[in-house]
Image 1 (spheres, one colour):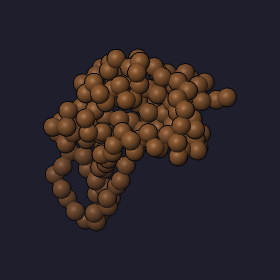
Image 2 (cartoon, rainbow, N blue to C red):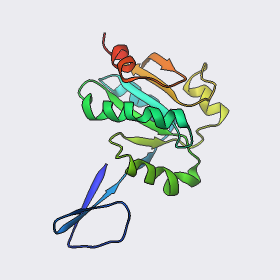
Image 3 (cartoon, rainbow, N blue to C red):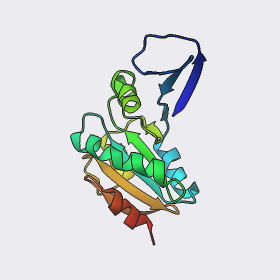
Image 4 (cartoon, helix red, strand yellow):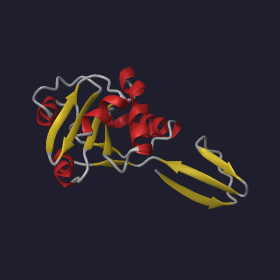
Length: 162
């Protein structure tokens, strides 16, 4: 998350934080990447990489997000986390970004063009039906865990600790 500091500026935006004499604008950057680039990252990561596919309209996804936020805040020395947003592209600016700002998301969030399409889903995992949430853990480029349902903090910690 990036924070821009604007001295003495008073903007009437809902996501501003007042600080004596200064205003901070919180902005959640959502990167656009390719599935191939994300797959390449699984090989480049020295730590286990947790990839979670989620959407703002998915109640179980939203209920599970605090697990990933906690991992990003407390366990970055042990693992990397990437959240892949599956909302429609037209909702990113109006729904997804404000949602992430409101939730104070500490994790990197990416979007992948074509996500949600059957071909995309099969490339991610042959056994993924496309249902959300969906979480995969990679270590050294190899898939060591996947789950098509909510995960717990303890479950993820247990899976990467060996």
